[in-house]
Amino acid sequence: MNWQSQLTQLILNYYRENTAELEQLNLLRQCKLTRRWRSLRIECHTASTALALRDLSELIREPIAQLRIARHIKFLVKGDLVATVPVQSCKPLMPPLDARGNDADLLL
Image 1 (tube, rainbow, N blue to C red):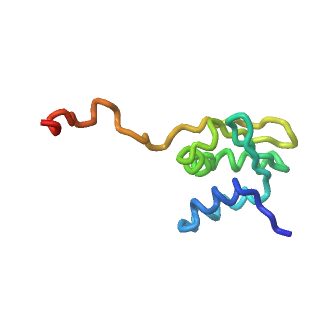
Image 2 (image 1 turned 90 degrees about the vertical axis):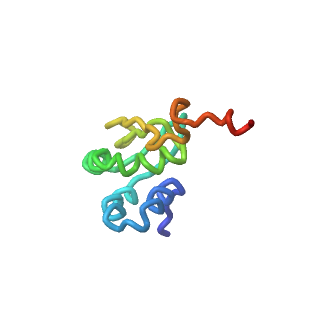
């Protein structure tokens, strides 16, 4: 049975229309993704897979940041931490207060 976690499917579906990036992320299918304590944990079988995914962390980070799933992405091999990547919001949800227009004149 070819079962994938919902987190894996979520990331792959985010890039379903961009085949080049989707091909790069096929390594995710070899790993187990879980979420715990505001961290996305990517458990890989080999260090080379974990390091390759770490290099692709920008692609993994974007859907995770937009959906606010985690604050950190941790790459692990057999339970040992290989790398940690912070997840930062790709685009601000609201413009800064200075950039907003003054709506007080609309009330007059």
